[in-house]
View 1 (cartoon, rainbow, N blue to C red):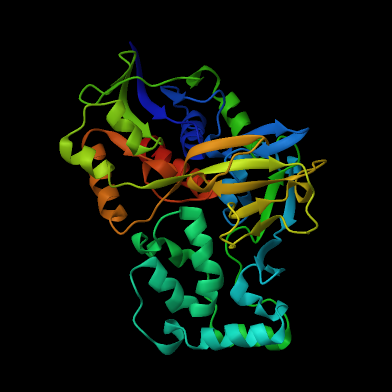
View 2: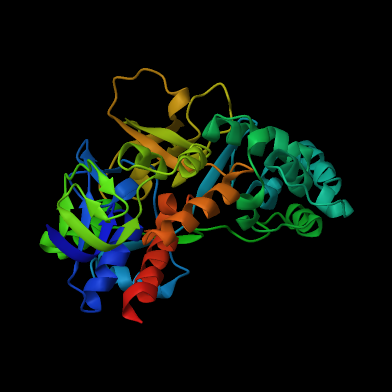
Length: 399
């Protein structure tokens, strides 16, 4: 029986950040268990057609958290990253428009601009109407019916493949606000308006794809990272894993719906975990270069299966081609290279917050800590996941 202070389940960005923070602080008593052959989780990359492809979808390093950048530069130095000013597009009415749509309506023909402006002027937030709780109503309240019906709602029907009435609005508040005045000014002055969301400027590795930094973090852990490890059982009362590892604390970054197969859970917790909803995505490679300067393109057309295209020839050195991201329920047969991700996005249902709070409270009572996208069941970019891992390590060990 191997005894450790911390057993970390999963070597995605949050688990790796937690583990490397422990190592930097002088804690050697931990082990990371990862079912895949290498570290990185959804941020792993593979070589396809002579260049890296991010098999869990498009991931990029946002620049706004300097302490996160400094941490990652320990493993992949700053000189090995390339900086980009984001070029994201939306296909709408037969043309490509810069994202966000509400800040770039001026790129549409005049008649279309007037259609959208009139709709924005009638949006609930402009009129002072009460803010709704459900996603579908919130989008119309925030952006007006026209943007909602032509872009936001069809796009989200594709990415989630769920009735939009089953989504809460809380997660969407991270979108930057664009007022009617700013939108109108943008059209009159023919320039982009409002604020860019995440990744307005981003970093991407010069070699190896986005997975390279996580691979190196995993390598730095040496024998404390066990890849290709298939969990079989967790004894919650004894905090033992597979009758081989005894942990003072279990740090969970794997999806909670995996736990009923591994451990004996109270019926109330088992049924609460059943309330957690997620979606999967398919990542399909296409060798053609698209005639666009975009790094990625959002596609709301519901006649097409994919919701986003990543034009790697515009951000991967020496690469050609692009890949598509498609909700797993919308996938069509293909002969192209395909990567299947069963767990891609946690879904913000109206019951999500209450269910997560109940699961995490039970976990804490049993010296189990939920961490990262799946441990807290919250969609977070990789920089946020790293920050969460560093903070958790400081709370549990460093301080």
